[in-house]
Amino acid sequence: MTIVVPAMASALALTLNAAWPSAEEMALYKARRYGAQAKECLRVVDQNGQPVVGARVWGGLQAGDGYNDFIPIRGMTDTNGEYVIQGKCTNRIRCDITKDGYYDSEFLAAGYGYVHSVKDGKWQPYGDKVEIVLKKIINPTATGVCYVDRKIPVYGEWIGYDFKEADWVRPWGAGKLPDAMIRFTAREVGPFDFGYKMELSFTHNLFAGVIRRKKDVCSRFPFAYGAATNDLYKGVIVFEVDRTGAQKRIWDQLEDDEYLIFRTRTKVNEKGELTSAHYGRIDGEWKFYELHGMWIRGIYFNGTPNDTNLEDRDSFKDVMQRKRQREEFATSQSSGK
Image 1 (cartoon, one colour):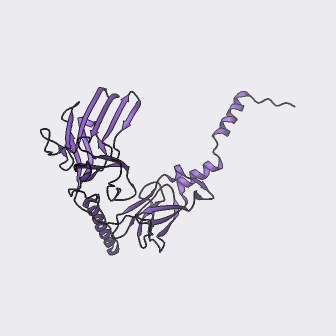
Image 2 (tube, helix red, strand yellow; image 1 turned 180 degrees about the horizontal axis):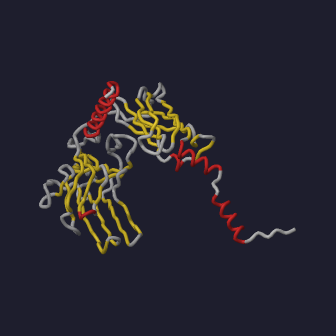
Image 3 (tube, helix red, strand yellow; image 1 turned 60 degrees about the horizontal axis):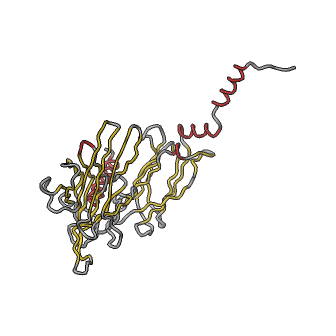
């Protein structure tokens, strides 16, 4: 006997089968909702790759829907600089790694349920090895200038900018020496049709220029300790944004995870050899189109000629402030406040 299945019933069966979650999808759903076992094997080393013994690990594993639903992480690295984070987790692991005499670092594993799979009740990969760099505090020097906000005085012309004073040179500002010459151009048609360009030139000083670097985003001191004297410093660099409609054709600015090392105020001898220079860094972000202004997160200018040190007191003060906060928190916990 032949059984004829109506077309509507057949389509409904296919739809139900297609919508039914697989075993893997159900396991992932349960792990996101109720948690699965996570394991991360940290190895903490200094800037030279040597293990850091007795570093404090302080944080938590997210164990619910909110950031305040967490299982505490409290411990110290062993003689190999290692510490194992292990426990039930729904989505996120975060902890600070600290030790006196070092800049704090952070371990962050966010979005477990969206970048990891789950098997046998465990997030995969299980027991992943992660290296965390804890940089030593070596020689903090002068403090930099943070959060520079300046109106762009003129478009289409070269303007001098003084890194030490963090301002335009006269007559546009209080700057004295032009460490960089900057020229802005702009096209504004509408909210989704615009273009802005910022050109930096250091060619008025021999051997002056910049190097673009990525930050070590896990560290409270995400920069190089010093400027390399033999690296190639670019005499001209261009940042540009350009958008037409929904398309971002060009989008290149100094972002929050980047910074610039600069060499400026150079002097040469009669043979054309570099004899003196000042070094520093632009901390990023460096934005130049919002409200016709220019915004820089921070500038560090080393005022000692030929001193390549880029380690500033602001970073050191941040470490000491965070240390005091942790001590106050620990005291309040022990006293039951």
